[in-house]
Length: 169
Ligand code: FES
Image 1 (cartoon, rainbow, N blue to C red):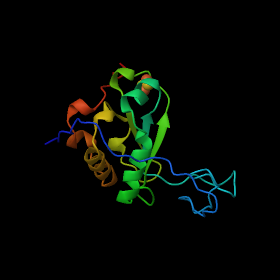
Image 2 (image 1 turned 30 degrees about the vertical axis):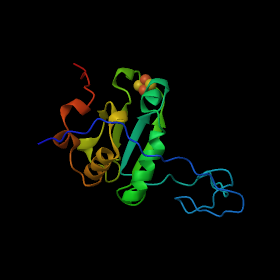
Image 3 (image 1 turned 180 degrees about the vertical axis):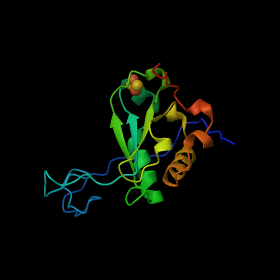
């Protein structure tokens, strides 16, 4: 039976943490980070491949969705993923911010894409979630667990969390 996600605003306080003067830090790709940045590598290689991901969450951060979210949701989600060990490895879930999808009425919009060129679950590909600014941290943890264990979101979450799509006829 699909679960109900709680609809109260997340209260977590995550944020950017740039490298300070004299600090040495490696980013997730193992490169030393430039002072004042959180992940910019000192040794830039234009041909370096992008890092593997199984699932990519495209989170709208444009004006209306961003205002609905109020907090830096992408950074919050990345911290949760780090805590769950899903920020790297075979089942990595990547979070990227996007501009407006023209679907502001469903804000804060989040598109789920699966890396079907690798080990992504096709059943969760091209799914759109709505009103995600109301999801609490535990809701995101549940979604991340479902995604990383290849459980189908459509079977596990209530219909009200999905953005309906008109299929071409
Ligand atoms: S601002 Fe997010 S869909 Fe328009």
